Every structure is written in structure tokens, then in C-alpha cells.
Amino acid sequence: MFNLWFGALFMLVHFTLFLISYRLFGRVGIYAWIGMATVLANVQVVKTVEMPFDIVITLGNTMYGTIYLASDLLNEKYGERAAKKAVWFGFFTLIASTIIMQMALVFHPDSSGLAHDTNDALHMIFGLMPQIALGSLCAYFVSQFLDVRIYSVLKRVFPAPGQLWIRNNGSTVISQFVDTLIFCTIAFAGTLEGSVWVSVFLSTYVIKFIVSLCSTPFLYAARRFTFKEE
Image (cartoon, rainbow, N blue to C red; front, side):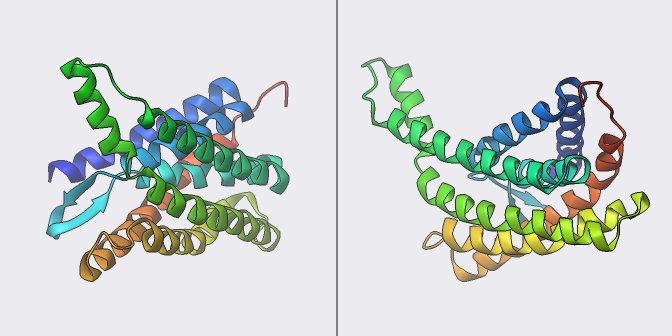
């Protein structure tokens, strides 16, 4: 039960820090958050944790879910063009961080034991990154642009301020299904047994959707923020 309750706190911290970033830095804070989230989500995803009922999930789902929160907020307040710019920004950040860390792993560490331990730890974390990053890049690219497009359509069909939850969750439920399918297929190809893959896929999608639902009140709060320069 610890993982369940700590996971709820973990999610609350993510949303709160996102609001703080937007409150302090405005639209720039959203772009900065997306850049950070694309990197941290792909670092956290290498760790799996067990939830009640023997459900195994990967970390990173909450952080990755905040990217949808960010793009939906940009689309809501600044339009589809701003949301698409954020998608490209996150895409570049993930590519750049992958290239840089793969090059960093090539360096030979010094002869000290600490250096070798650190190098081994980096290999454990980032050694799997190419396959994970490829899955994430493909999933991110397709699902994020899909989310932006669906959100824009729903914004025209359900334009009322009180219908924000329809726009947010309606776009997310579809785009995150596509994202999870693409990511799990590529990132875990050849590494997980069929039954484990199905379990990871279902739990990942359910967790992402729960994160989306829980983020909706924070999206309403963020929409109320105003900035003189904007």
C-alpha cells in the first residue's frame, strides 16, 4: 500500500510544481517544464514498481502525463500553434539528451572505484535509453500532435469554459492510448514476455488516464492565471 499512497503524493507534487513553474515564468515556464519532463520521464521509465493486486507499472507515467497537461494548457490559452511549438520543443529536447548521454557513456572513467561505480550506474540508467528513447520519440511525436489536433477539434465543438474537462480528457483518452501502444511495442520489444507486456501496457494506459483525470482541476486553476506581458 505504500507505493499507492506515495504515488498519490508523487502525482500531487508533480502538478503543484507545474503550477508553480507556470505561475513564476508564464508561458516560458510551460516550455521549460516540457523540456524537463521529456528527459525525466524517460529516465524514470526504467524503474518498475508493484502496486496492489500485483499490478506492475513503470515510473515516468506521471511526469509524462504532465506533458499532455502542458500542451492542453497551451492550446487552451495560446492556441494550436503554441501547442505544436511545445511538441517540437520536447521532441528536440529528447533527441538532444539522448545523443549527449550516449556520447557521455563512451568516455573511459578514471581508475578510482567510485568512478567505475558511477559509470556502471550511468550505464544501467542510460544504457537502455536508445531503445526506450526510440519508442518514446515515436510515441511522443504521433500522440502529441494527435492530442493537439483532437483538442482543437473538441475546442470548436465544446467551446464553453465549463467544458474544459471534455476537451482535456477527450483528447487525452485517445492520444494516450496511441502513445502507450507505440511506446510499449518499441521500447519493450524483445525484453518482456507477452503476458508481462500486456500487463505493462494496460497498467500504463490506465495510470496515464488516471493522471489525466487528476490533472483536470490543475488545468482549470492554471487557466485562471494572468500575466501582464501576455
